[in-house]
Image (cartoon, rainbow over all chains, first blue to last red; front, side, top):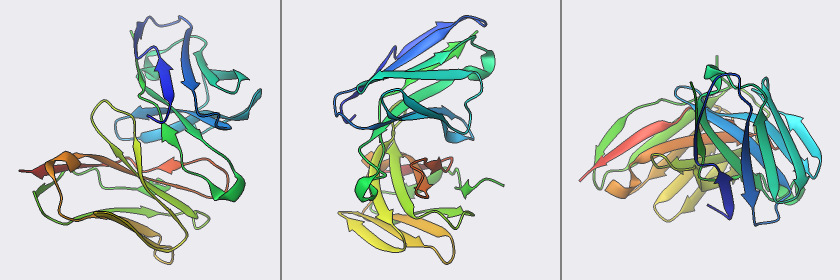
Length: 115
Length: 110
């Protein structure tokens, strides 16, 4: 999984509680991404980061926030979890925008259930 | 209408068959095209990456891009049971954001 770990790998939480998912990379890649994967929707981008403290919204960012204080770590926070956020969350990394390197490499995923 | 359309399958073929997987898209700004393979309960694994139109071959895998028709394909020759997985197409303009198809499930029967 290209030196990417995600924690926790599984989590069950209750509606209304805050949840933080962590993505850690050992590749020193500049770009990091959070996606969610749901049946019939494929992978959808939540937020991404193009450097330390530099983040931007993706397609489905409502209800999520992110932080990146170190190159290797990208955190995804659900401020107040809802059942609609039950999903599998994937972190991805890519190396650089220079030279047209747009390939993204994915972590193993976190399966989140909100009850 | 989704920006990227992909038949969900499942596509069932006998071992040794040639498999053709396809995606269509609507955004003419897409220039970068990728195919990912995803095994059950695993993260997507990058298989092929192509820029603009043309073909790219890597072992048993061939990726084709036809920008005039907004159509991309992945061919798998001599398919094996280990190729059974979900195949996701993904594409991007120059914004580093990937747009994914919903994936096609492939089953290769021994």
